[in-house]
Image 1 (cartoon, helix red, strand yellow):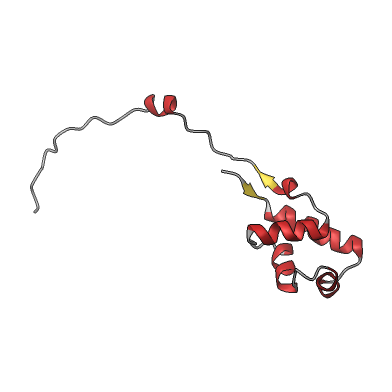
Image 2 (tube, helix red, strand yellow):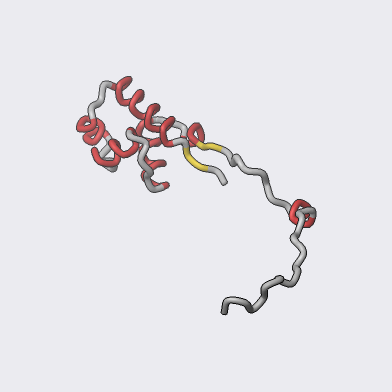
Length: 99
């Protein structure tokens, strides 16, 4: 499953604010749909909703796809599932004991 690299996003946003010379308060004033708490969460690599993530990217002029991490696990296919080893069902030696 794909995920967002929140640390990379936070670093890029912090860099962008520094580049623009904006404090949190100035950014909030220039970008009225945002607020200081949202900007702080983003910079500190805390999760944002998808809508807020896209909003901050749009306001800051950042490419949201630059922070997308691809899947790290292998793709599961039917062919792969059929090749898996299955443990054979056997009767237990002490079945019913200890009940």
